[in-house]
Length: 149
Image (tube, rainbow, N blue to C red; front, side, top):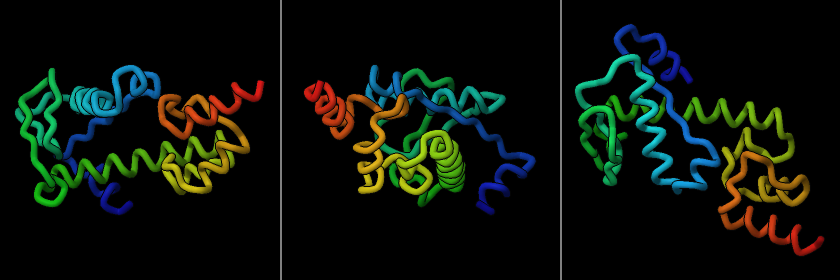
């Protein structure tokens, strides 16, 4: 958290946050939704950079600036590592807020991954609007409820 606070306080460091909704993920797939969130983050910087470094090997299309793909980028680029910190803290905070709205899924601890506690919450409390219906464990719960009716 200290690194995140230092990044937020840095005078010459711009932070843009981008996200994709559950509906967008379901419609265009997780990879394309990730690219859409990257584009939104760049557009939310406050200015368009001369170059964006992106961790990975699959280049997103239609970005607002030139990009350079860097495999293992969070280990070799300070700006990619910083972006990873911002993304993780932002996601953790969103998951904590979601956990307050939907108790019993363990989102504040598991970030939505299919841990035993999360799966137990799904079985006991059902599927929320924040679960991806195309994801196999969610699909099986929905199908099981439909079969029971």
